[in-house]
Structures are given as C-alpha cells and as structure tokens.
Length: 54
Image (cartoon, rainbow, N blue to C red; front, side, top):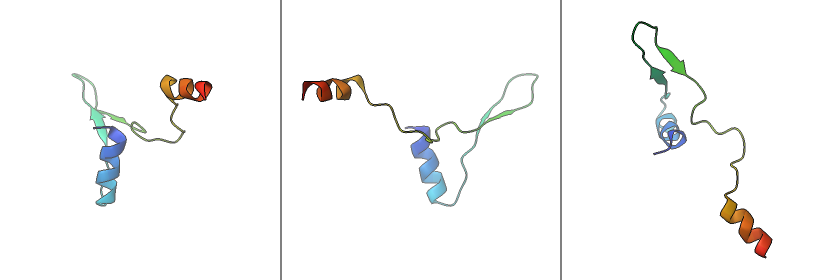
C-alpha cells in the first residue's frame, strides 16, 4: 500500500497519519511530507513511448 493511500484512508476517517523513526540513543524523528503528493506524477517511459509512436 502506498503511504499516500493510507494517509487518505486515515484522513477520511478524521485522523492524522504520522510516521516516526526511532533510533537507539536518539530522540524519535517525525518524518513529514512522506506520501504526500504535491507535484504531478512523472509519466512512465512506456506512456511516453506510446505517445511517440502515435
């Protein structure tokens, strides 16, 4: 499952998804903006190739 999909599910139920990395002898690190799409997805090379063939 993509993190963006999981985030969507959680937020649609009124929650907030947080990803926390824990390391020995260090404080936890909250990883922000992972799984958040704010830019358009890159098109696959297959899609670009089919455009050239048309």
